[in-house]
Length: 147
Image (cartoon, rainbow, N blue to C red; front, side, top):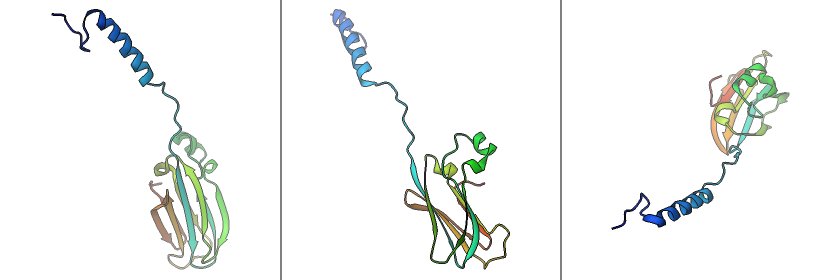
C-alpha cells in the first residue's frame, strides 16, 4: 500500500501535487497593494436663533498624525468668521478617513456680547447620520472625541 502525504498524494504524484499547490497559492494570493482607506462624508451645520457674529473652526482633512496636529492644529482646522442669520445655516462638507477621531466643528462668539441661552447650535453628521448635536449661549462644540 502506498504512503500518502498530508495532501493525500502518493509517491511521484506527491511532488506534482506540491508544484500544483504552490502554483495555485501564488495565483490565489495576489500581492498586497496599498489600499486607500475608506473615506466618510462629514457634514457640519451651525445655526443661530438671532443674528450673531461668530468664528467657526472645523476639521477639513485628517492630519497625518497626532504629532502633526499638535504641532499646528490650525493647519488642519480652517476658521470662518461670519454673521449667522436665523434660517440661514452655515453648512460645510469634508471627506475624512477617520471621522471618529478627527471630525469636529466648534462655533463661538469669541467673547463678544452675550447671546440668548441656547442661541448657537452645531450638528455633526457622518455619511448622512447625525452623530452629535450641541447648543450654548456663547458657543458649541460637536465632536465624537473629547477635546
